[in-house]
Amino acid sequence: MSDIKDMRCLNDLLYIDGIYKKLQKHEQDFYIVLDALLNISTLLPMCYTQYGEGYEEFRKYEKVYTTLMETIESLKAYDVEVKLPRLLQDKLDSLFSGGEGNDDADN
Image 1 (cartoon, rainbow, N blue to C red):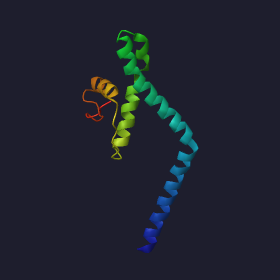
Image 2: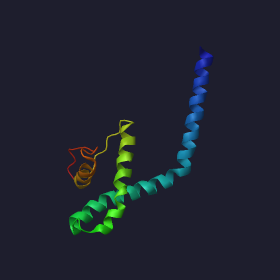
Image 3: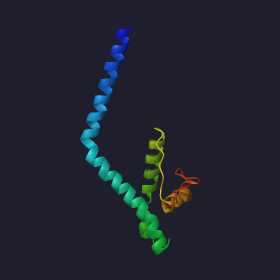
Image 4: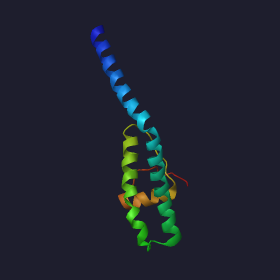
């Protein structure tokens, strides 16, 4: 029984080591992309509020909301809760009928 446990432990260590190396290699890129995702997704609703929905030039960036929703869903798979600013949550709700953020966000 101990040999099986030792083998599982070794396999888990090898797996964790591999994904940890990947994290270390791409950590800075991850933060750059995350910042861009959050920056664009929070800025677009403010632009629509400021300039009105008629500014079609902003629409080409709306795929960011799908990327944001996929990111939120990935976090939820690990029981991570995400609280979004109200303006962003309202936008996601309108796009994804019953968006997946917290309804009690007060920003």
